[in-house]
Image (cartoon, rainbow, N blue to C red; front, side):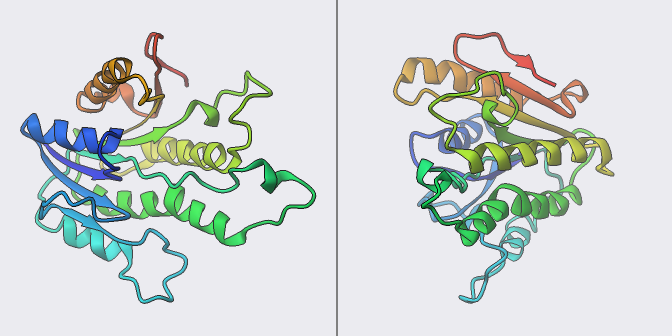
Length: 231
């Protein structure tokens, strides 16, 4: 398969592991990241995702991406794994003595919503009904069962991932190529390699074996729990 991976991550993280696993399995992987991950791969590109501010003369990420996928005839999987944490992300941002970081909001919107929207519309030109579009999301974006927890300060991360979920569902219902669109909510236990490998395998298998039944679904794959669709 031709797989396009956005957000290759650093060594030992999901994106990087997905990249190497997919290549080992014989897939052709094209990757795009914020920075150069030294993959020694002509099919890896990087550039600024800050599409609403390009005064520094940066090449638009859309241009970098179209050059990356120029020679691909068909995209089988588009995986959006890019994440910048997103603003607001600190309890200091939520107190009366705090200030609102407008640039933080704009950068978060770029990375979590605008850039994937731009890249997916470009990718759809090379897709068909057998293609898959996958977002990596979080349970924080849809699970409100816990009112007070240690992650409640990550307002931007949870909020923009929620917007991303809706973008996924809108694309699932309306993209003109019939491509399968889905999101994966998982928790990667990097501090517990044995458990992480189990979860990684489940997520990898889901992404590389999509069917029409997965369209518009958020698949929750968490440690120690059965995988379920939450919508």
